[in-house]
Each structure stands twice: as C-alpha cells, then as structure tokens.
Length: 123
Image (cartoon, rainbow, N blue to C red; front, side):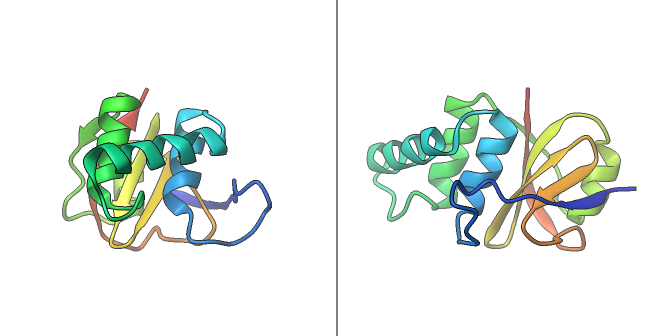
C-alpha cells in the first residue's frame, strides 16, 4: 500500500509553493537550482505566464528530462502508486505536482487521496 513520506527539498527548508521544482528535482536527481533554471528558460522559450504553468513544466519533464507520459486519469495518487509500485513518477493533481518513488509519495503534505490527471515515468 502506498505511503506518504514527508520530504522538503527546498534548499532553505522553507514551506513554499515550489512543488514543481521540489518534485522534479527529487525525481530527476538534479539539484534544485538547476531545475529552477530549466523551468525559467522553458517558460521563456514557450512564452508561458509562469514557470509553474502546466504547459511549461510538462514540456520540461518530457522534452528535457525524457519523462514518459503515463495514464492515471480516474485514480487517486495512492491508487496510482499502488499500480506502479516500482520506479519514479511525477504525478499531477489540481494545482500540485508530487513525486512517487517505489510506492512512496515524497512531499510536504499527504496528497494520496487526491485525484490525479497526469503522470510521467522518470528513468
């Protein structure tokens, strides 16, 4: 069964609205500042309003990091994790991005019961 593990990758340990940067950094193994730069440059190239725009971070996940889109529509984050007990995934819910590694959800809050609409496998 999927489990929640508190994890805050923010370099200052702050609780901020930086879920996209935190999740992608953890899933990719790349340093937090590098992910911030990737997201910033992606938003400039795609002319997004914000580096946190789903279009921009989806592009960065797929085209820059090689994330493989994986269907999760109709499942909660916990159900998705249970169906994918091995591997690393970025999972999107409404207004949030989280990281699942080997059936554990690493985040600053427990979102296992939230419905997800998109996921990417990170290899």
